[in-house]
Image 1 (spheres, rainbow, N blue to C red):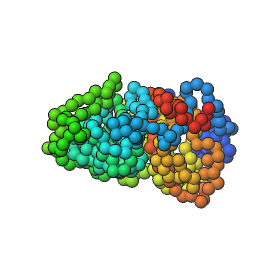
Image 2: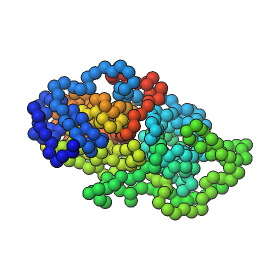
Image 3: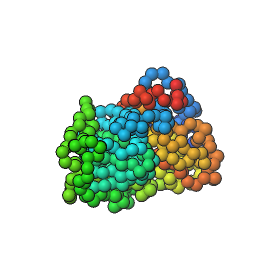
Image 4: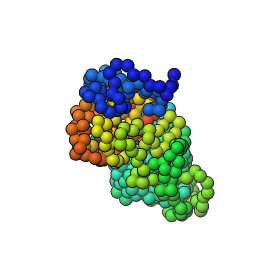
Length: 368
């Protein structure tokens, strides 16, 4: 039963996520940090375990993975994780697509980890740069022309992505829609994209596919458009971070976009909590109703660089969080650092995610 009264039993700190005095703060919560919770104050690090079986956290450096589009212009992204609501893939395209593409099973949200270029879309050309989110509505036809090798984290939702309700923040919600870049139509009538071809191939990506449609005319021949369903980019530099001086806020405060069973968040540089005794590191937790994906874009934490391109998967129900040594360092360096300079993209999913074989084969083995 939910209640405005939270019980206390045994030894507990007076403030939430603060003044632990040697205890380990472990949150057992429902509904992805917005439901009922129990904060358990332990003697020992709950992540100090060795796992046997499939339900264990994995950590992979994505520069060790090889999507075929990295070497072959006709290649494809590498699927990393999937469930019934979404799939996450990695693309590392360096050359222009010799085809057009259309994801027909759901909306596509891509994070540009590295690179610049242009997406030719039915809505018009859409330039992208490092740090951009690129949104492409379900079944949009597009083609990627990188100026430099481009690494994308691609999230395809079975349902449509939506901007979450602003709630009491109103127009001060971190995602300001006025900052998005929206393309203007620019119909294309150039020659076929591959020498010797007499048609324009459009590759349909779908469950059970792919399918290829061969058009006799250029598929991006749109003269104009209207409506509220369109492609856009949004750079994380324009995301307004919500902060607190006295408590480390839950990940859901940094929500960017959501679809059924899928929640995408931006953890970005911010002022560190500055009330003495406040924990600056996310507390141990099991997030029992959601799997968690963290993709490290860059930055540092208390002066220690974060590994760019690392992707971590924490299954629901399994303890995870920064190791105790990192927490102790954060406490020791409390007066030395007044900012948290991380850049992490997070994806929480209601259903369990299945890691691809390439993920399991390249696991760094921290819990093996």
